[in-house]
Length: 245
Length: 307
Image (cartoon, rainbow over all chains, first blue to last red; front, side):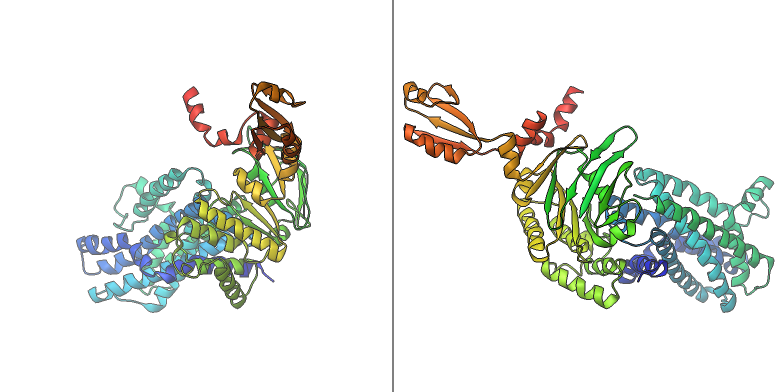
């Protein structure tokens, strides 16, 4: 017999299959973060700058990948393959959860790749903290992926809506999280905006954890932010999927 | 297999389906025929649980489509207008995923996928990415996906739209074979007249969301149009010997339920030519609605001109 769990596994492995068949797609989808690493990081002052910069780039890579993932669903809505899934006995929540969970896999692959590229340039890896950091990031990227799918379901008759919203939100989220430059010396209003951006807390937690500082308030705040984004994404995503036709 | 009562779907400002009562028995092959926008696809989408009815009810494969969606979904196959396979997937992978979606375990899903790849002649393309397949190959893959769980009832929405004549003939053959071998009940929508005519033994004509006729193609034609017998004579006097019909110089036209028989009977009057014109389903639609289904295919152009 099937259950929500087995249904989710079916959707998860279906989503993952093209990635497994063509692993290079993971690398192509992360060229932008690699550009920032190669062309922006050298501009940062000081010796420890890579240690500060790399965790943010890992979050950025997750933001870019997960926020775009809804476009796959949008395409499948247009071609008819989403309808094909809707007519099977698969439970509606599984159609969303399985897709969102899949986002973890390219995120992990990209994180490993970024770290591997940076170690020769002096990046020091604290494995325990990094693993905990990736766990927190997993929650965040499930949430982002689910929100992206929600946006795709809402844009099924208006493709431009998906890209407009995604592109409009992408850079404010990124810049206000202090991924590229620290916001400590910015004006008050900028810092205030940064404080309501959940990604800020995730980025701070990743920086602490990748540096091996596990028991800090950053870790806790990042965990809370990631869980909140994950829960919110799954909640609205499942509701949107249940209404999908 | 299917029983609907007053099945209705209201979209914002249009009543796409307007109180349809339809009963389909096990093993039937039924074609829903009508112009674009007649409500065929909306009816199908309600019967396959994709959209809920606004009012009325439908039982499909023994279960209510609004209350027992999963039970219905487990028992029906549906081949929609689009491509069921994801374009970035491989055909075989998609078939296995489909099998798993219906609760098959991996080895069983793999075995079933192999069977369908064989019977639909997809062997050479099953391991290729779907986006590289031709229209006809994708359509065959769609059919394979719809059949993965060997459903007892199969819905096809405009299955041959966009296919070239050869692929259409192929597809029709597959559908007919499926029915002959497994006794599958089949409901399809089409706006191709010859398709409805040659495949279905029951044609349900739909217009403006209502059923306006429901019978075998032969009966529809006999009841609503009839055969026309056209006799040519060498003189008007000879033509005048024909007891009924309309006379136009040396040519007489007569309408009949059984044209060939009438023609044989009238042959004794010594006509120089006899022609029996059998009606098409388009003639039936024309008689019923005053509009032609054929015109409908090209309808957007005049509409644009008027605007």
